[in-house]
Image (cartoon, rainbow, N blue to C red):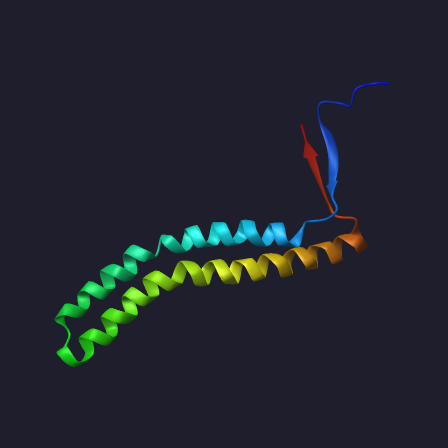
Length: 102
């Protein structure tokens, strides 16, 4: 029996939806953390607003800073599951994506 060649073509036939959802949730949640400093900086600018508006906008800035990474992660998790399911459906008809591995 001959060993396989060093470079071979493989076909990606299926993506596990839950696995794709978890990976995308982690990546997008981490990406959402990049926006936290910007929302916190924006909330510090509320100190120059009238007193009646200051509290509301400061709370919104801090709220967005805390909720944005979670929101991104949840949406990415759902999108990863749906995207993987759609890929799996399409791969049944066209055979998947062919990749070259070494």
